[in-house]
Image (spheres, rainbow, N blue to C red):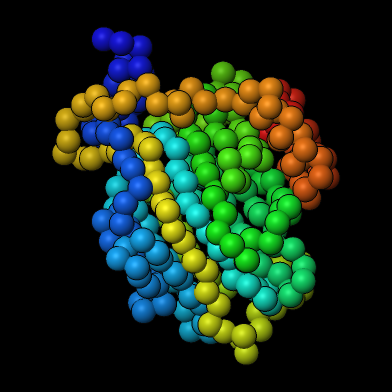
Length: 290
């Protein structure tokens, strides 16, 4: 058995009763890949399944989730965010398992008043515990055109990328007692909802419902990932040496992430000594690219 196949089999074994169907999952129709979860007609699939829009009004938001669960992979989605006065709104693209001790990897886009920048909120949960937030502004207007937001999740690390530029890395420090998502399969989720009690300037700016409905747009979902099926036997991928399995940050990537974090990061939990008055989390002492 090759090393990659061994790693895959080990990951499947860790998932206890869940067996893995390891395949190359590629970009496809939203009809084939996603289920609308709430919002009714506020969620619309169009253009033959290639485009999906989510809307929010004073009665409800909307959302969707992947038909499949995954255990590690690279997940890309193109988004164009709510334009104009988007204060109070939150648009999301994230992975999550279910249950009280769930794992989760978050991209959340916090709206703002016209002319003020969106806040990109990232977080990682493992075994139900999060509190690992980093927030950024962007070097472009995310409402004018589509941009690609990516999560790479492998056994060594989680990488957040925007237009293939790494903005954050969360490394696996389980050896130091830091929980890391390794055993719970996750689905892909997306939503648009109202969170004006906290989302914009700490909740000081409320949603202006005269501007409703608010609409965000999704396209080009791609999951190059290990699908998980409760009833499937484990099989090898057509391409079992996919780059995401061991993807890290090279010298050019380190330069890019330094640029992003020095110019556009607005909050880093690893610098929040007031919040963690008894000492920063263990991983904060181990990597500058958290």
